[in-house]
Image 1 (spheres, rainbow, N blue to C red):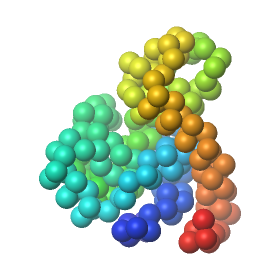
Image 2 (image 1 turned 120 degrees about the vertical axis):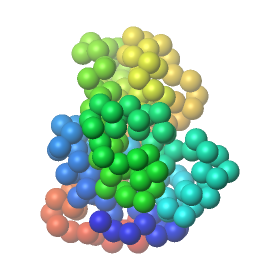
Image 3 (image 1 turned 90 degrees about the vertical axis):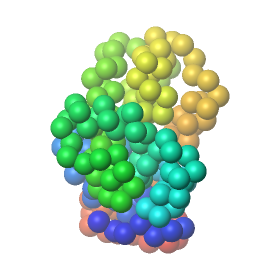
Length: 179
């Protein structure tokens, strides 16, 4: 697992962990990797996240930006051994928890939903806004501006996430510094 370096975080560095966790959870690696790209807007470094938590105690943690309440649901449902605070120090654990959360959201999503969104798009909306909102969007309730923005970024990062997974699958780390 590559170390998290301040100012140099690239979700592509975690492609192998994404593929492994997605397979274990039974979800799409592309979905998980795209979520990581979408959540890369904030610096992911344990020290920075500790400082952020001091200022904002209920901040989200880890490379997948998971909130405490969400993590606790995932931890109980899947009997995870770690604590919420471990997400900031262990990217592999954070990725695994995110993949399990996406699996839980997939189980909660009705099989039939509006055609406006793909299943992955609804799952990422659920990741961002919560299960209840995801189910409402599946029924046709339009998302608000923040959720629409999250969905636009998700769509924009799909190809970048696919490239990162393809490089990892080939065993080619690629030149992530140039991206």
